Length: 235
Ligand SMILES: [Mg+2]
Image 1: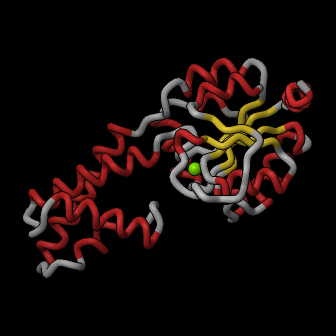
Image 2 (image 1 turned 90 degrees about the horizontal axis):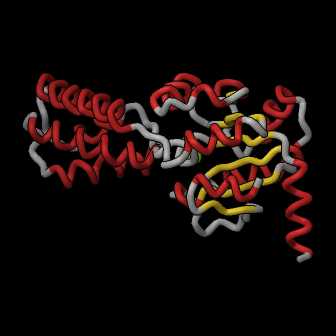
């Protein structure tokens, strides 16, 4: 009963909810898996001497090593094979074209995201804090048809700092003219999203449904979400 009382108190102070984008609003990993499959297929079809399965694994190896947003992924994969210059470029462009086509086709928000944001928007100020570059952040919101819900969108380019730096969180608070305790932050990465928001004094919710990284992290959120809609239960 005591805990319930405390939680009710916490809830009542919240006036804004801020979200991470990738793997919180948008099924980014799902998109990366589908595009990797499509580009592996296209490059093998174009003559790359390997199996689709092997190329798919190579793509994710580059993501693991250089980051999932690395811009020279296919070039790095193709360097492992002995290809002549024109052949290299032809296969690389087949991979890139397949990636882009599939990306625009398959980029999606998680289930119930739009419906839930629509419900929240009447009661709370909604915002975004993402480590994605400004153009990619907006591209993803537009592709998922989510752009209309947010009063403020803070991207990497606004502070040049990644979470858990305090900078993007501070900037949002300044823009919204709110105290940290009035904001609930929702993200999938304990060591970036939850750590950063907690450090600022915000309430936190971990997007368990999208979590890929930090499964053994010591950073604990105030709430955990098994799906996006569960947000309605905590605010
Ligand atoms: Mg994320």
